[in-house]
Image 1 (cartoon, rainbow, N blue to C red):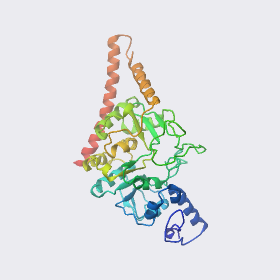
Image 2: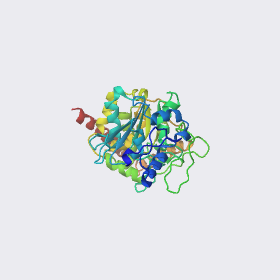
Image 3: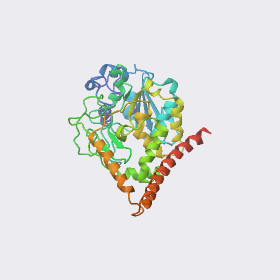
Image 4: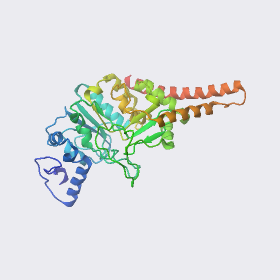
Length: 383
């Protein structure tokens, strides 16, 4: 009887319906949904969410866009009145729009923006279809990519909570240095099963504070990621930084972030206002969509995940301030490049210059290869 189950009227989720069956398994599912979405009474947005969960909020006001493959969407059933599902797998929800299995969630999000550009909701929440939960441990254990203390309700209600002043909600869980792909994680992002993480007190904390328990961790190399992106993009690992700068110039079309540090939300969950999305033209989003519409798992989908804050709008400011460690990473990179290009071809000055030129040529070639990949994909689909 699960398809007919609705949440009981309570201080958690207002509803005029009753739970129509009460088997132990059904009640367990209801309990899981309550835990996943977050209790209304405990979040401080109870009036708005009362209307949302009782169907009084329209899709023109708030829309939840889910990128589904084969995930179970039972957790989102209470939000069916504002939910739009795009599915690329074989076990789609009954209300899903079927899409070709290309471009991962980036293709789904951009498809929605392009095809609804003139009728976007005031506030759109974009998310992968997996049930939201804390952090992400690994591909076996999984995780729903939420920062500790945050629920899906925070994403849904943020525009209302700020009286329409917020143009987006990006809760940054990671930062990556463009030149090296070194990553730092936020302390409120769970990556180990036994990890005790501090909890955020509100969704207004886009970035960690300068002091307290919610802080950035140290930078670390992520060799598996570098290897993956290198293979996907056809770029040598030592040239990834130059290739990503080329991507930024060609597709993001904004100034390089301070200290070349990109802040992003792991798992590609974010919310954006209609006004912010329309800071970019429909043609711009169409170009992004074209570039990831040819392959099931394209190179650019990984770079898009780093860049959603910057792609969905044309913000002139960075989401987070840079730190002393960010500056240290830049200094370390400069030393690394200087050491890596000195004396490459021998002891003579001429040979040394030739070595530097060879390295520079390789970097330029890799950047051009990624730029050519982007251009070719766009031209292929516009023809």
